[in-house]
Image (cartoon, rainbow, N blue to C red; front, side, top):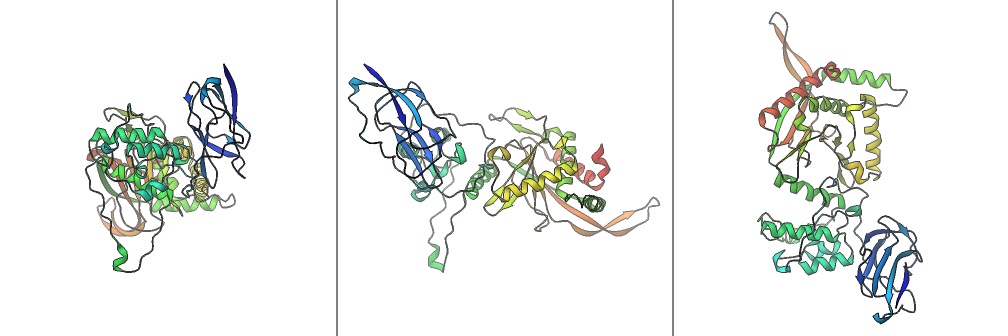
Length: 442
């Protein structure tokens, strides 16, 4: 005869309101005693809660993101008398705890929030078919639960090479399966590109060194950009825009809105100019689908803005830019920049972009090659403006050199979608719009 048993959160120490980050069972599952039920994560540790019984899961009482404490109900189970299992005298201690890697509360980006969810592999391959070597130190620091770590070791998968799709970039079993499937499909060891790993070098033999751990944002951004650089055929088109009149107008706007505390930057004008350019050249507002055989044209205009923070690069997205005024964009940029510095951006804040702006104007430089923020197909790089002599002729054909404020533009694009002629047309159009702000009204 079967009994219905409640399984609550056991004694987990002094933790209260611990977040459920992974649910490892579902209704109808047959489980054994000590099988993990859920993964919890506090500010200090991650832990798995094991089952005190063997039996069948009747109902899961929690969902991802719930906050639970000792005594809260996790699941109900149907336990058979013949199973020969009984509840332990005291609440079971939590399974292996691990100290999570310090991380900034920002998405995966960006991170990769816009990537399609991984497809689980049909069957688990032998470990020898996946990776030849696992970086144990990086494996230990990977953001994953003990069950996922065990699963990865069984498959020979290196967690340090896998991007997580779970909360806060946590690596799930599905991510491990998808990575293994991709590695097998490409028929190579490790990266899937046949590239030999960097040799291990003892730099201390040459002099004094200091080792600094990369932030989680650095790691996620690095993997994301590395993938994009290797898989997207980049072309960069360089151009210049005369923003002399734009700068005069910008200063006038700031003076008029001084009492309201509104400050309009060149970046707000760039966003308005991009809105106009994307409407004129809709192919730039598109993405290839996952097969690479279809082009998805977007009817909305969301613009990502790369922002430099203490923990690394983040790219929040300003939505519906085509429906906002210059002042509204300027105000939202200030608010978003503050949230980025305060580490308050969410994964949603960094997803859904159509094109990205990477502005180094406040730092310097004359030109650079920004990396396309795939699955977007283009990114606009902006360097520091400077005064240059420009030869201007009058109606009589006579002319002279006059000082003009020139803004360097660097447009990188995916050559699978955009050809060189359209790239040049796009930057030429941007240059005309920025040089004459009246065109923003068209």
